[in-house]
Amino acid sequence: MSDHPDMDCAPAGPVEQHELFKQFEGTWKAEVSLWMGPGEPMQSTGTMVNTLDLGGRYLKQDYKGDAVDGPFPSFEGRGFWGFNDVTGKFEGLWIDNASNQMGTEQGDYDESSKSWTMLGEMSMPGGAKCGKRSVIAVVSDNEHSMEMFFTGPDGSESKGMHIRYTRA
Image (tube, rainbow, N blue to C red; front, top):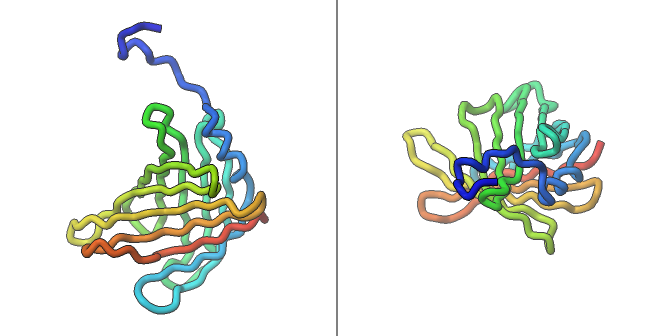
């Protein structure tokens, strides 16, 4: 290896943090609660299939909703979750057929709570930005959850989504 940073371009292999993705491999049933404002959330279900990709560097997520009607009929989404060993952060990318935005997040893992806290930002109609915080928590080998919170213009946070995943 060279002392010159431009010369250190050897491909990086998976590191210890990538091992954490193995627990999410497989097929999961999803129970989704979605808040579009005050009041009771909308409910839906779906299936998430998670596979390790590119030599175990990424968790590839493929989601398909069960609903054929409602606010998001035939909902589908794709995600990638990885660990950036340069920044020391976990990174996520999400796309779906309910939006034309690519959602990105960065965050950290807390071993004591077996959870990730991921932070991101969304563009709103009119160009304003909205902060986003996701918490992914491992409950057991056969259950995990994802909660998503949005930050309003006044800085207050509101829950937007909760997904309970159980191994199929």
